Length: 150
Image 1 (spheres, rainbow, N blue to C red):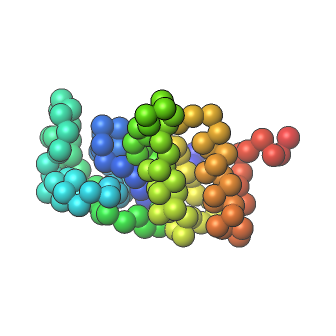
Image 2 (cartoon, rainbow, N blue to C red):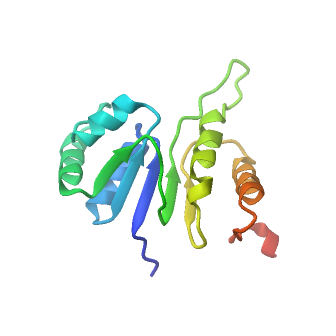
């Protein structure tokens, strides 16, 4: 069984905040990251900024226990979960600016053995774009689990 000491969740919206809170409730240390300071401050106070039944009590519990912290900047971790928005542009194409920014924000913190999970709704080819970005910026890292092995 794999053991992870710390998880960074990028994006504290309708997917990221509940994900961060549930993981923290299972005893893992979680850093919730959002680019909006108001979101970071709200969650850090143990409150929520979205409407989700029963989430407020869970967030209050995991924040007060110290299992969930928040920041506008990521830091080193074992697992990085990207749960940022992927809106549709005027031509009905997914806008990947937030995904790209999330990858750029974590690439310096990646270490061998880290797990990067893309939870954002994304078009075909997005994971390959992420892999390419990481390998270009961090040639010292070996990317495992890809189709390149076989």
